[in-house]
Amino acid sequence: MLSANKVLSGLMGVCVGDALGVPVEFTSRVERTNTPVTAMQGYGTWDQPPGTWSDDSSLTFCLVESLCNGFSLDAIAKSFWQWYQESYWTARGEVFDVGNTTFLAIVNWKQGASPVDAGGKTENSNGNGSLMRILPMAYLHRELEFSELIRRVHQVSCITHAHPRSQIACGIYISIAVALLEGAEPYQAYQQGLEKVQGIYSAPEYSTEMQHFQRVFSGAIDKLPLEEISSDGYVIDTLEASLWCLLNSSDYESAVLKAVNLGGDTDTTAAVTGGLAGIYYGVENIPADWIDQIARKDDIIDLVNRFMKALDNK
Image (cartoon, rainbow, N blue to C red; front, top):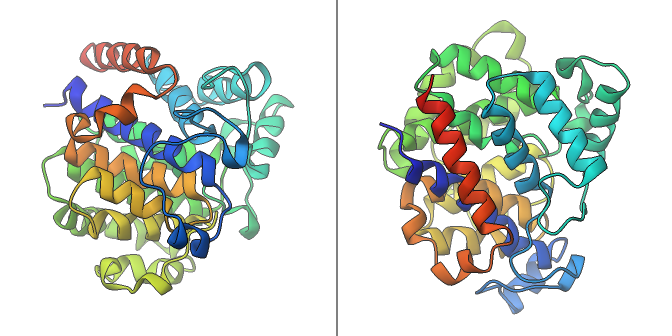
């Protein structure tokens, strides 16, 4: 049975990871190795106070807010527009760190494109901007057939990132998240998640894309040396890095700090890692002093309660 604790654990996991990464985004791995992040800090790259989360969490919360009223792609797209235009679901009333692919897609939708046609479809549109916000879809797993869940995950990705590669990355991530929600341990969830989507992604329309996921589907992403793990904004790199960090850690804290200290796109790598680690280890095992510093903590808890009520009414 899905509990409010599991929902809060995943969403706070995303948010705390994001906030840990914000001050050091775009710093190099050498910098992070020399002066690793060990606690919640502020300022740095975006000159924001400690506990400030970015677009990763904002768009995650926008998705949850929309799902409280049922599943509507237009409503989700509208909430993204409100975030960009009106600072809806921002940490401190300010939008910063907007990805270009996401921005162009939101504008496309506002100018009349359907949600599934709004996102970038070219190969260079495969940033991590849909993967970073997709976790809430995992909480629909009780009410949907698995194939329908993944179809909707693809649709939600398409609002900003419509290339098949981004859709597949989101599908794999959600499949693993669902396995964690159902009680699997991280490595078991990784294996089960891959097995469950294998049939979907063996379809002909995905055949040319699967070469990009070979390292993930090897079932041994955790065995790769650190030097082979990239942590920039490319969706494949973020998926690989987040799984590597999760599978090479034994608690939430070490997983997200490992992600942040890879350098590069620190907030997103840690947010994507943190969502899975949060589900598995639980919000009670996220350092309390980190949670206490999170901007709008009470609003996030209220959102979780409203989302749970919506899920229970279905």
